[in-house]
Image 1 (cartoon, rainbow, N blue to C red):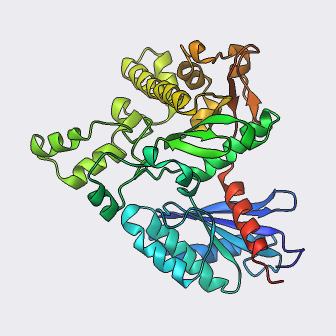
Image 2 (cartoon, rainbow, N blue to C red):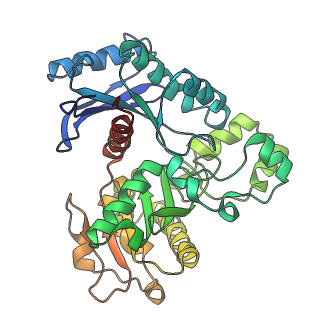
Image 3 (cartoon, rainbow, N blue to C red):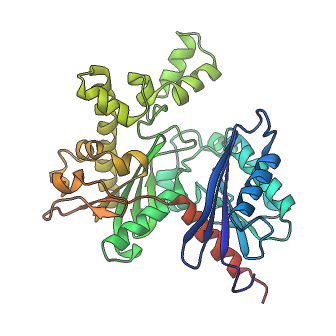
Length: 387
């Protein structure tokens, strides 16, 4: 890795898609980005073919996979378990360990591993780094991480709170501190990552101490198609009384619940349009969604003891003024007061939308998970550069 090697390629390998972004770390400039979809269908047979397509697109943009300025490839990996709690240089041993974690994320980790294996084949001498969605949450205390189930069973099957969206929560918590003109270790922040998947975190002076997603991304806030928190006995009831199989219940809670289960839509813009037309099911879905967020804000205020800012991010968090307003309603006792004029402004840059007298700042902070992955991967590659 030479001083001129300033480019980082970020790969996010899904089961049927491969997203990529090439970033020049010298100025954080986006040089190329895109997505290859429908992997396994038609001409894109597998992740190998998908990455060859990406290589061609990068070459057309002036920086192929063989570009000498490419310093590192950063791979998003959804689940690191308790084994991987920080960005990790990938070698054969790491890949073998990742294979062991597949039971914790059977829908995500196999695709992540496939992308890693292909990229290592195409650029075997290039540093490649795994950056884990779960890693930022590895600092939560045992009292928050443990479920109150039989300890031996939990340990045997890895049952504990891991949390997800970690790269987003890490980036946004630091960006919020910067917006307040402070260092990350000077502030307590509640981060609300509200996209089709949604999660909350309590970040105490730069360290995550609580998060809403658990063993899987199903727990916590109401999401586009996921239920979020639910009485676990619902599963037994559906099996015993409804005669539903485990797979059917899994599909119900992950793909036919949340907003889409309540009103048939998981797009908050469409829900807002329907509310404007007087649709009661859309109104109920919106109210359930925001009620759950308020509950978590209150709970995380108790966890932190003192809150400097609440940061809204991701598609819904960044773009829905109505969600931000409803989610912070009745929180004046906690020092939260929104400015309706500032909240209504649409902008791409980080901004404060709370009233001047609000004890707790309310911020809108666009997330940048790709930059976070690139930054972590590039930094680790630089640290391990041959002397």
